Image (cartoon, rainbow, N blue to C red):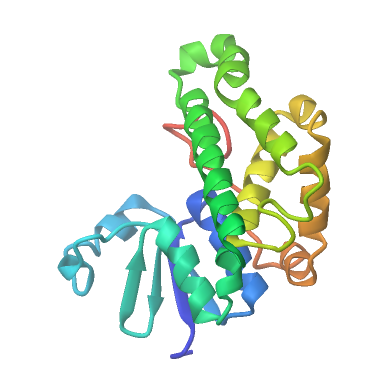
Length: 222
């Protein structure tokens, strides 16, 4: 379809999975273009139009002749594309809360990447200590921050809920014992997964159950 969006990313969940949730929630027609091999992506970088784009990267969104890069910008673009600027935060306080939660998610993922990119001979011995020191305490803060809130930033669903859900999915799979302690995040996970559009997507063949990350550099997620 000429009028559908294209979401381009590797054939993994990674940074694109929250964007997939958002596009599905918004009901925007799209192609989920997955580059399954490095050469599929790097092979087109020296071709038009990518070779004319300064910020070219994955993930990207193609909308007609327009290309948008950088994950944070893609959420903003999708919200405006669907006339849903409320997903960026309906009030100044919500917008601030969205940015705060986004920062903690990024910090937690940074620690998580440190764990799953450990040298293979160090992974088993160090993963629990690093999880406690670099990830778990941040998740505890998130769990407390969303306590009593309908959604991550307050009373209204925002784009950060899509990112938080994917972090919850990751934690649930990577460290189920720790995940069992975070009751507020569990509630958020359940509420989000029951949104009709999300529930339909999760049960559909469009849903990418895995891998979270590719084998090779990563010790987990494939």
